[in-house]
Image 1 (cartoon, one colour):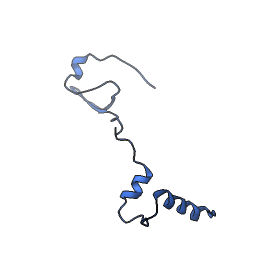
Image 2 (tube, rainbow, N blue to C red):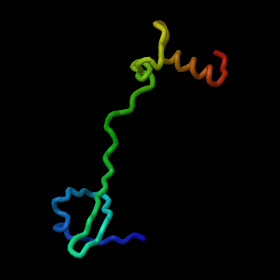
Image 3 (cartoon, rainbow, N blue to C red):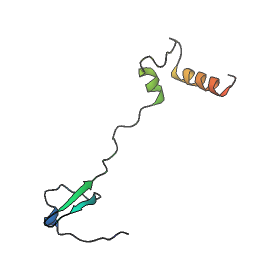
Image 4 (tube, rainbow, N blue to C red):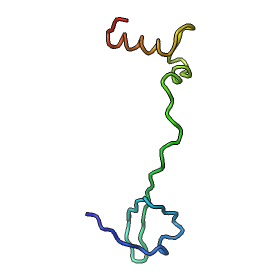
Length: 86
């Protein structure tokens, strides 16, 4: 069940609440209410890296021959994994 009520802003001043925050009532006492606010933090603004960049920077997990490209290593892996002929 969901109930939506309006609470005067004076009761929440100083709590740094923002639109979209979730309020969870943890305890109700005679003179106070214990609440928890949850906020979804925005996702990282950094774009995810490329697989080829990971291959170049991975320390010791992928060994590329001097004349081998990341695509060659990737295709070699898939060839072995799926039993393909090149």
